[in-house]
Amino acid sequence: MAIGLALIIILGLLSDYLFRKIRLPGIIGMLFAGILAGPYVLNLIDPALITASSDFRMIALIVILLRAGLATKRETLNRVGRRAVLMGFVPAVFEVAMITCAAPLFFSMSVIEAAILGAAVASVSPAVVVPSMIKFIENKRGAKKGIPTLLLASSSLDNVFVIVIFSALIGMFEGKSTSVLTKLLEIPVSIILGIVSGVIIGFTLYKIFERFQPRATKKGLIVIGAAILFTWLEKTLKPFVAVSALSGVIAIGFIILEKSEPIAHKISQKLGKIWVFAEILLFVLVGTQVNIHVAWNAGLQGAAVIFLGLTARGIGSYVSLSGTDLNFREKIFCVVSYIPKATVQAAIGAVPLSVGVPSGEIILAVAILSILFTAPLGAAAMGVAGERFLEKG
Image (tube, rainbow, N blue to C red; front, top):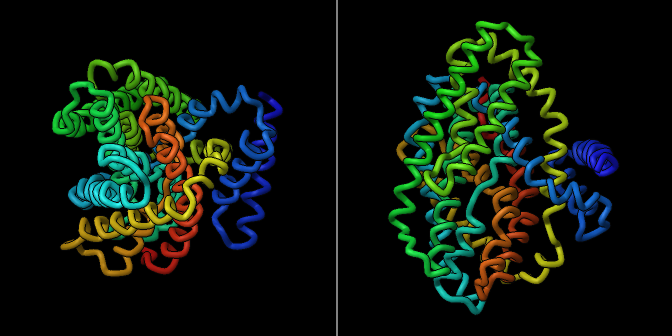
């Protein structure tokens, strides 16, 4: 495993450097490095590391979500709250509906299978979106209108919403007494419980830091440890009650910032250094999950379904922002930022196949193809659009 980690670090840093040299986001290079080094191409990474990759990816995602919370001020959150809620589910509804209607025209599948495909593909990737938004916040681009904060919050809500819809559809296929309406009611409950839990954890950590005054590095490690335990708690409670760990992790950082900006900034600086390693780990390991042979089987039909879904998502994103103070260019930036797909598709793409959905292989192929198609495109487009369309405050 140690050799595998060394390869990931070296390949990640090298690919990041090369892609920045050609003026493309470094994360695209890391994704491609993971694809090439992964088990489906050159098979250079230790299988034990691949097996544990979901845990490593979760830790890396926790680091960036904590940084997001530590960069989110109350006044900004108040300003974007309603928009974030709409962006959290309207674009996904548009995309799932479009794919549900379009997929049977391209593939031989039932409506329920097409809906499962839509839910498997629909989620935006916080792993790609959040790091970009953190950079825009640090560079103060779009900060005046809270655009990066809006996308930070809404991308997490989008994930919760789509995963709940996906699990409900899988339950319906398996013949379990799963009502979509009941599952939809779980969404606000899970988000509220996640936020409340995160607030409690954040406040407790703040009190500990005030009382014992540990060094900033130790504070950062304590916060990461608490957030990891929180995600474990989510899995433990899942059979009994749904708790959104993603929302809770952001809330931990938010509360620490609310209670003490100096503590929050010091922790954020330390997390920024940890992120240098975590970013490489996250994107290279996401790349290792991409089976290009499976994606190839989806072909042009899969690409057409993904394109139609993205078009519907873009319309949904624009509709969500109607009536706001964002101008046309800023709305287009938000639409572009909702393109990337990666982590959720890699995690759930194979589930339909494992539970016996007849079109499971097609769903997996389209899910993997969506990563190859949208992650590099979305990451590059966000960088270009952010520089051109967001005002620097």
